[in-house]
Length: 117
Image 1 (cartoon, rainbow, N blue to C red):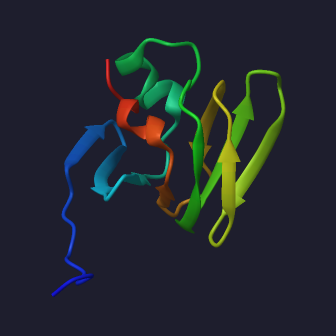
Image 2 (image 1 turned 120 degrees about the horizontal axis):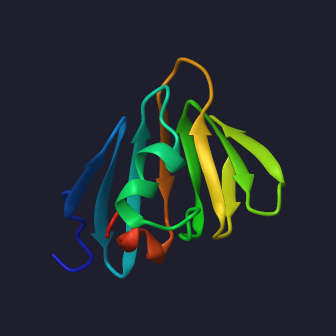
């Protein structure tokens, strides 16, 4: 039937210390679901994989649960929690705040490069 929906599975799962990224492509849109456990920090879990001083992937998304703190290279800091939409430019570190895992859905095409050498 024309226009019929079909379920979409995960194209790839990338695991790293205290976290994982599940990537799916829906039509022309890349969707990344990030799950970070308490104690996760980009500079400790992903930096050793990619080798950059800070995260160079831009993020546009939505927080499903938990809370994340972002510190930009210029010193600007902010937090996002459940129900918040976010736009994070390249050049940042981030970490989970509190004892609850962070789950976020990211719609940035550049996520295809996240946590890759």
